[in-house]
Length: 312
Ligand SMILES: C[S@@+](CC[C@H](N)C(=O)[O-])C[C@H]1O[C@@H](n2cnc3c(N)ncnc32)[C@H](O)[C@@H]1O
Image 1: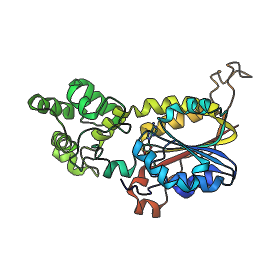
Image 2: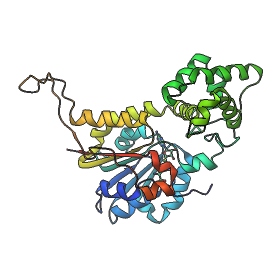
Image 3: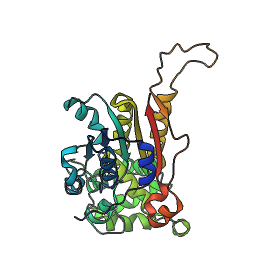
Image 4: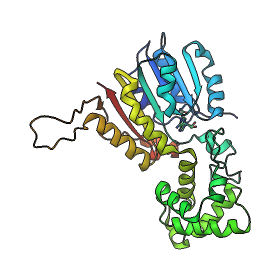
């Protein structure tokens, strides 16, 4: 598979990362390795980049792209929620920068043949890590109608979640749903045509997002990871996170705020008694978004939000 460089906000990420030669950095979501390339160039000589992706195709691509820097790069085919263990296993007590560029890559969408896109007719898989047992096909064909409706509502914020789940239940009673094309047609038929005509997005967009999030347990992994952030950074080290939808961004925003200002004492108390210790300082008061040139050239950048915080 030929990967494309699809890095979102490369200049903004680079500026906020504040890297120096010799730094120890982690790119938790290598994807096409565009950000990773920028990072390794900024920390040489002497620096080390730890690169992670749960998709083995991204790791194989990173091996090629980052080959010229191989003495300073270590790659791990893992979920980023494993990062505390990866660091501990390698005797690392803190790093200077961590980057997360969440969601899926353009390559996964257009070339993986795993059914991420409603515009293609591919096996309904949606696993970013094919070692995981649960596929979207199994979810769609074995979960109850209510479970599916709940997933579409919770992870896709789909108003017509029940109608979409019902259409699936009726169709699968005849024959199992096996491809992304079949699912997209079914879901599109379940959304009232007047509503679909007014929407700027394909009618199956939200259901596909919801299934992908559920199959890969994306929000649970992100939540687990966020809890560990302050313990993985050196003092002055920064975490930079790009998210692509409000569910992810909410988790990132709330956790970073809590590390900065998590005191639960009543405001009237003259001093803190809850034992809260501030461990992070939020650097981006508002999320940073891509500029007009980038969003014109790369539609995926339109929904991207970058948040950065520093360990104190
Ligand atoms: C938006 S792409 C990253 C693009 C990359 N920054 C670049 O410059 O090309 C997201 C990547 O993160 C990976 N990913 C998403 N969630 C992950 C997780 N929980 N653990 C490890 N990798 C993950 C996906 O497999 C995908 O390759």
